[in-house]
Length: 474
Image 1 (cartoon, rainbow, N blue to C red):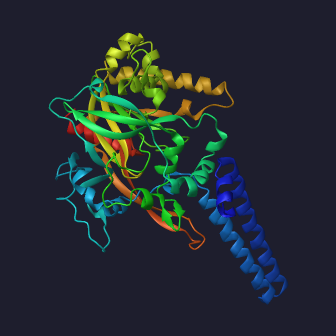
Image 2 (image 1 turned 90 degrees about the vertical axis):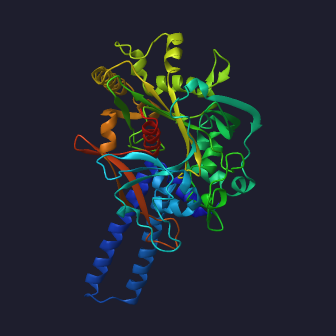
Image 3 (image 1 turned 90 degrees about the horizontal axis):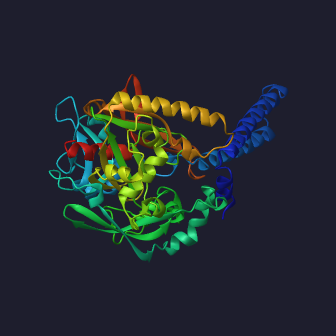
């Protein structure tokens, strides 16, 4: 492994990045002070030795800046957030594209198939920021149920085969070790959880039957998590695994593609429970997310009492992990009895499936669930939970970030959220190679809402969950 890659991995930890930032700042201050002192002592004359020293200083300073940038682990350093990039890369996916259009009204409505709405030029610049009538996702449709008769969550069947996902040899030889060290995975004995790699979909009575093979979180990191990072010979993971112009079908796709699951909770007076994710999370940091969301791991999707894998089993376990106050609240929003809770969660509706382009076509499945509680009851339960979390965090010095997966919660009227949506773009500079010491300017497209005079960024999962929710007429 080249020393530059090793140093980028070594300084990827937050505490070491702070140390590196201090080194960068000190080197700049000391070098600038030395330059001014030398010029002053020479009476303002630039000698040859001074010019050589200045050149050495600039080279070292640029190298330190490159190292600081390349050790960054934020989402923008892992995969593109530029919608125009995805439109060009996956131009043959336009008929499946999920998006929102205003159609001259004050609210956005969900739509599928961009073919009639957007022309993709071959060479000229695609400026989607001028299209105020469109809010584009970065996902495409994989399956849509009969919207007149939505299947229940128990109608969606999971089947785990004896097959095991195998990493491609060129990933194993060229990039796996670097990725694991970059995420500090090799030092965490419990990091490599068993996941469900989606192999194929069979539609039965409007509901999908999903067939999985066994996999691991390491394989997901190596194929879905860093698509814009160079792997070898200048090619990125995306260019090797899912180059476009169309996604490979799940049956033949090379990435690990473990399933993501999301569910929107709706109160009796039509408010949506929207968590604000913590900045500690690996994905969608600080963004709004579905009420419950998570990965399709073997452990979370397995029902011990029934001996089967199912999305209902996942929902029950993720609910207890992410929203425990709904089960433990004195107002008993969700039944505390295990049997009654299973029957209640079985009322969740299946809304659809998508594939996320950011992470090389990672499959996501979406649900919604009506709660027997009003917005006021939910607000009281959230307030009680916040007090309990603040008390618990004050009693422990080291904690798991999973405990603080959600920083806070919003309750937003379901119709109002589509009226307050808007898209925006910003630019971000990321240094990837020493040949571009000033960095590469990346465009980041975001979908936001304005709520109580504050701006919030929607995660891709929440945007797609809202699109499916609205398509179903809920």
